[in-house]
Image (cartoon, rainbow, N blue to C red; front, side, top):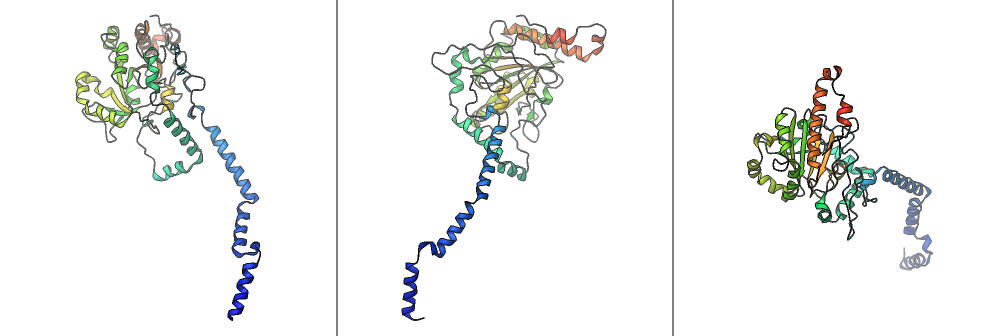
Length: 370
């Protein structure tokens, strides 16, 4: 082809309409395929699946998890957080805990899933939405929110229930995994579950995250503030036990607690070392004692101390928070005594058949008078 012919061809190509350009036609065809009716339908399907997945996410996973100024699960009134608010903790009227019995291994920070199982969960769109809500709620939560709530009655979340929750209505104390003060160690995983410790006995559980919370728990359980409880526990040592759970919020506090084990062993009697659990509550909770579990058991402020009375089937029958108010110490002692009678009646069914006290009448409905 001569030089003149090449020039004519170049001019013809340059002057032709843009719609006839080879690259333009390919691009137009590609755009048409992407923006076809199938793409519209796929968009609708994806949006519909997203809406369905969002509807399955519980309300308490949203950013504003307390729109009614109540805890999302346990429904306990909480402060609004406004200046000059006059807030008084309400009397606990609903059972605390989870609906299903606890099992060893639950709420453990150790992830035993295979890589394929982890990838399947990671790629699931519904789980992605749930993780997004959890991350938003976690990182947008005010850092000093819990400390600010200490202004109201020293952080007391609720007043203890005046009588035992019925056994058939009570909910379960969750399984908690953590390290203990045991000299023999905690096994290959470096920790133990609370469920095997709680089953078969009446347990008085104190949960605290700092010295302030420990002082609050002591107003319920210490020999100085409640000598009557020590007499009840010592006279029923085969049935009643004390369990402690020390909570830490970050890795630094957790490391300090672990380094101070020798000091803790000096303060705590040796027979309680196996029942002193140390757990970590990171700010971003994906495993372990999650926010939902803490809400269900009424643990609304990790800076406050909590006391739980748990029966032999791991059900929460009584709970207290913050500093003990007038009547709550006597109420705890009466609740422990009543629960001991109930457990003994359950252990000896012949007593009920011979005309002994009915469990429902004497224990579940008995009013605990301070």
